[in-house]
Length: 473
Image (cartoon, rainbow, N blue to C red; front, side, top):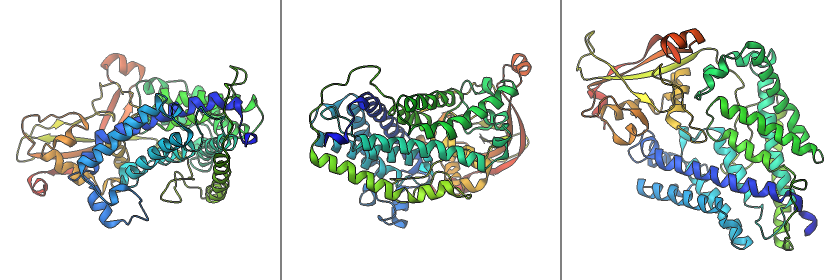
């Protein structure tokens, strides 16, 4: 079975496995810290209500059989501990079968969370983490040389991530074709980072260069992943550089980091260090990698058909196990940034004299003088959904009303998701939401005011509401 392995890929596998385990750790910790308010027993979209409506075959999860907030928390923290152990090298300190079991447990545990996560887990990087994690089960450990077929499957996954994102841009918004999308994107992206203001203020010719470089990275470099070394390694490193640019310019949870991890798996170690000595590959393991390759090839039919379709869709899973998916990002770019600002008042009547105090979120823009923060690869789920809600109230139909109810009750789990609660001693009498247009300040405005943003009120998003909604609790 040694013909199914390639010793020179050992460093790519090592880096890939350790960093993937770190991303699993981040994902489990984020789930543990946010789930109670979002989908706990008394959350905005409770898991018990979801599993009563959706059968196991459509959303396989351990929580279909049993759910409690305590059990969910223990599940998340157990996943985090296992991920931390694997990141520290535990899977390389046990026999091959035990190492595979560790990776399989990580995948199954996170699948259980995603499949009951509802709208809070409707992001492409959830499926990407699951598909990547499933392939990691078959990578082996330090006992054997890297399985060449599985290492190539990682490149095939990276190709679909990058090439899919590139195609949907070219088929979508015309600003990608005329190289003007980055005139707007740094300002209107879901969650700007601390350097986004500076990226937005780059000269427009540089924005056009950025856009052109993005097309090269997503439509050209992925093809080179399937060429001989060292060309494939240089293509992978080119993808790493472009992803680091995205890391610096915004907050996209672990999407960029996971893409970097996939790209690093394609780096050839033969020019860096000699491969260590490996034991012979067990026949059963070689057979499993062949079967896995056949399975992925068969399941790739629908993702490939989607790539070739003029009606290409982004971030689609074709089965509830999230095994071979379609990916893509920003097929269209918004030109104007809108933000929902939520305020409360002690006044029982929404009179002109009422004093309204603003709730502050951790990541999304609010206070115009507050510099955007870096959170990725950590994922602030409520903040991201607030961005979608500002695009259209339809995105908030299932959860925004319950969110307001919990603010009216000063629900501690919900308030922990926020940066600042303006009513620490007693709940507000009324809560309202207003829609604002935000834009980055110019260099001159920034010097004169110290503000990062300027905002203009557009209209009400939710009129003042109070005790009637609170009574449902």
